[in-house]
Length: 167
Image: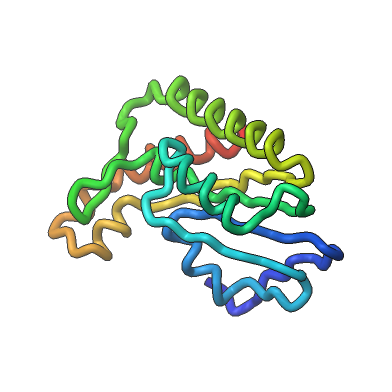
């Protein structure tokens, strides 16, 4: 990660909430809140679209219905990969993954609409998912043969690019 800080633009009386999977914990030191009134980062390892209760809890704890706020959702790798012990693999290890991604995008859009309907002054922003390496993750976790995940990493990259074009 670069040494440059990401500065959130100052907006009077507005809160910012970033809800992310485990990658969110790395952002705590990278985001400067000095120009933003109230910024909170909630990081939950394994966050996926099937764990919306975590997202709703983070919003309920950090944003009141009368608050002017922006909520950033940064997730998706956990929807595209499956954890087996301490290693991960591609969930949809097929070239016919488009319907699965379309379903994920529909669920994200529905969640977005539900949040904005319940919290009238809150805007939800879905952040793009960065490319992610299954091979490097498993190597970091101590896998004896991480190179066997090279093809899965390439497929995951295609799936992430397909997903990002839709969000």
